Image 1 (cartoon, rainbow, N blue to C red):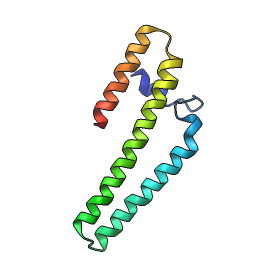
Image 2: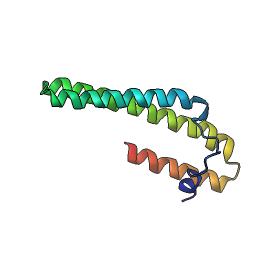
Image 3: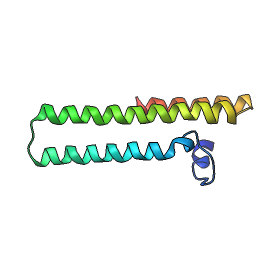
Length: 102
């Protein structure tokens, strides 16, 4: 549960902090793509076209997720955990999160 408690600390530097603006830009783009899919459904567009757009959104989200995971490993796990027990706990938390992702 330490990982969840750490997420509430507003001033903490995260693995994605240096790329936060780019991350938010990507997420807004994904949000726009999702709204586009809603419009396609509302307009009764052809199913394969809608499925293609859903695949694009999923791929974009996967790319964001992998970037977040990489930042977590590089910043939090590599630089932030000198204690082997804490590192094992952080590894377990990351693997659990990745398991939910895939």
